[in-house]
Image (cartoon, rainbow, N blue to C red; front, top):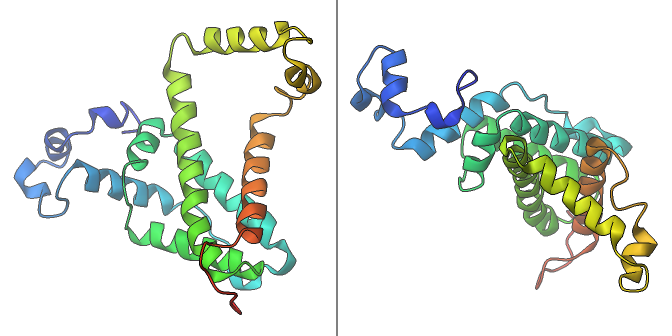
Length: 204
């Protein structure tokens, strides 16, 4: 996968690499989706997980660091990121990741229901960000489209688009890393403060 991309990883090719038959692989994985989930789980084995029980006031910093680490891992595997968007990973390392995220939110005093819904949202956005960036990096015309978009906003007349004019200098400010961290920070604040519909206050 690292050499040729996820698209070239098929049951037949994998079986050939392992010197066995494709049918033998189905003893371990039922289909390509399950294989992709297993690949993700293997990659997650290298993702450092903080001890959510000992983070104290650093819970938000640790949470953002873990989420950016997860996103950056998938940024290095854009084809896998696109596949994961349609998966429900269930490997042991993914389960530990979910447990750690829940633990960090708990350390921050986030109600259980909000944390439970929030974990899905945070992982979905991290995965989608990696998938989107992967598509852009692989598209030949991506930079031209970006340049055209920037030019269109910069050229928008102040009288016709007063809101763009007011934010013009901020629309493209900051680095990718800064924007990624801000995205997660903003989402965490929302998760911590917006109650789940129909939920009751809990003692966490």
